[in-house]
Length: 337
Ligand SMILES: [Zn+2]
Image 1 (cartoon, rainbow, N blue to C red):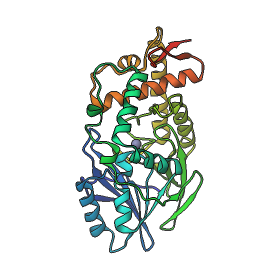
Image 2: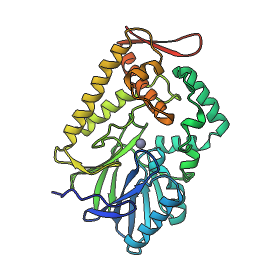
Image 3: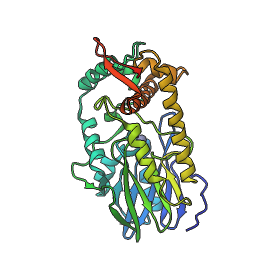
Image 4: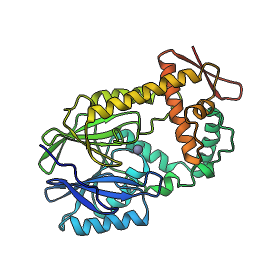
């Protein structure tokens, strides 16, 4: 199918992408100021992909869109691609209010539940442990990092019963078959949806047209290799047809999936070489991060940058190019092998 790329909708409004598929733009109060939601006509109801964060504004947008664009039909299913607040934020209240079934991968659902359930006291303890491990010493505080909102503030509690989707599943949505493709890197079991008949990929955060999704180590799995997982995922997506129309969660739909994937692989490969260079002498994650991201940063961005640096370091540890050890203060150190 040859689909013209639509002009982006205004905040809180929808435009048609192709018959039966609509693009809703939900504003979010961050530097990245919106998330794209995809609305699919589904027989006697609708299936939606992702939600925006939980806020009075996004709730009002959803109420308005459902009353103006759903033709009196209900939201039947809500598929959430991954656990980040701009995607899962409203899932709890939307499912409760509409009776829609929640579809998620198991790891993303479990992870959301875990993040929503830890107390603030525990979150502060984990943060102190994180600061020590990463070697951040420039007065980065919990309050500063979470001033944009904690998971508990940005999301509604997700339903305690959900429909698990897993890699290879085929979902019939409005007479079209959508194949579930899961992958790691940006989150643990991130879901993309591919429709071969229409040649459309709902890529969520895995392939974005202008920015590279954050690929970071989580302190919960300090020795994990999310960049390796991301390369694997991109390898799978690169095998899709070259003329696939990509519907990303941020910015505009685009064509040129393979070229965009090649650019991202290139970007990370260059960053790996840089990180290896930076580690000619022993470095903490924070020290390496300040060299890899030299512009001045604040709050949550410092954490994102450190976690992404950590991902590059762990990748290089994995293939033997960098050594990792823990010093007496419990801080990781890295040096070129
Ligand atoms: Zn995300």
